[in-house]
Image (cartoon, rainbow, N blue to C red):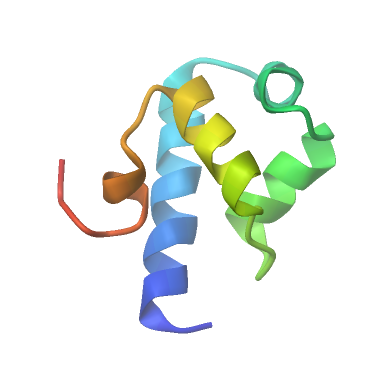
Length: 72
């Protein structure tokens, strides 16, 4: 996985952990299975664009931050 992919994975893991939500709760908000949420944060699998947008909204985090385009 390239450096950008690693940044995305690390930031997704951090935001999922900091959200206070379970993977089941996040999955329900995003419209995917809890297993997919885990895969997005731990494997090479990345969400589709529409899923990524829903994930950012569910986690209340900027897509630019997750993508590594800014540091806040």
